[in-house]
Amino acid sequence: MATLTKAISKSLFDNILPVFGNPRVTIPVWDNGQKMFICDEHESENGNRYYRGVRFCDRIVVVEKVGLYHNWTYIDGIELYAFNDKKLELIQKRDYEKVHRSEEFVRSESENMVKDYLSAVLKAQRTAMPVHEIESQAKILIDECYKSFLDSDFNTRLTQILPIIKQQ
Image (cartoon, rainbow, N blue to C red; front, side, top):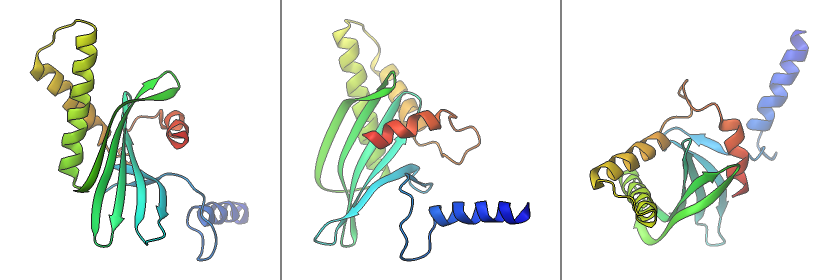
């Protein structure tokens, strides 16, 4: 029994972290420092690296498009998605050119995008709501997106959400 368990474990870890020269299973990688999944990492012909960073809560998904040029990390774009049954719908998008990436900037922009979306929907529905309440709700949603995947109380619906995110 011990050899079977050892073989299963070795094979599992060899797929996750294979030895040099072997391909790795392509799954989103959790980066706890940035509190997001790293997806679609690639290198351009010029040697610049790009990746998508994905963070989410039970209501929205925030996708960062990040570029690493020489010694600088830039934010190329932020997309905000909302869940619609079992698919994602783009609700806000901002593109940037030569803007240095920082967590404060991404948080602030994401909160502003949520505020803009909520304000627009409320206006379309002819519903009034105090600005401070919209700001508070936007902050709560973005804070939920920055929750660590490694926390014991992380949303258990992850197995349903990750395949949807990988399709985007």
